[in-house]
Length: 252
Image (cartoon, rainbow, N blue to C red; front, side, top):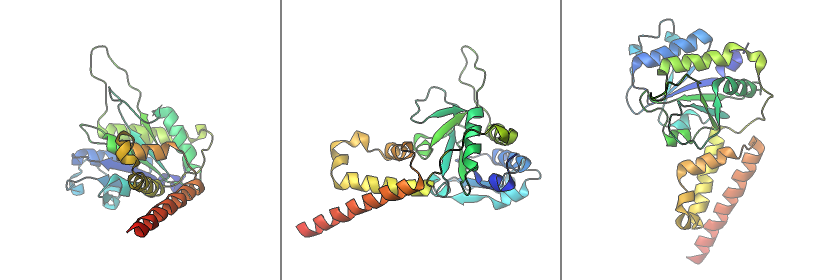
């Protein structure tokens, strides 16, 4: 079983969730399976006290934190996994079915101090491409699909409950531990520096198709850097920016 310390290093992040009952259902599932870190990213005011489904989960709702952006919500996390029903959408991330994804998440939690985030999107549209760009990889719940019907998807509360149950169900089947990874905040700083270098060198003007912010964010996450390598690349890009600034000052 996962320890309480490991459970506390799992952040459930709800993005653009509009229905208080759904938020309450997620909080109830978190409470029932031992999770406590609920994070909300929403431009709309969400009345947590109206989350009527959260019976016996009042402490989860009370401790929930609101963030202005996905980047801020996952900045302290070393692994960010998004959820998707897939459907007809084209994906730019590795996709794992839930049982395998859960084993990867448990393996990540075996690393001391590693923190992971599970992202759940809007009830109607799921996670947008920009929101998905913050993820290291995606997971989906395998469901039976009937001929001639739309791709099946779950209610937000149900999906969160299934994912959390699978995560705690059998920790003994964890996959081989994966290497420690930099936090999402570290990768976001690296992405920001890379964007500045591409703009300052003129690359983004010559190749704009390669410089979409979400695309660059996915690029830095696909590199699968460890914290030390991420720090080295950040230092390199900072030096490049410094040199570009000096060249600009000298020409003026």
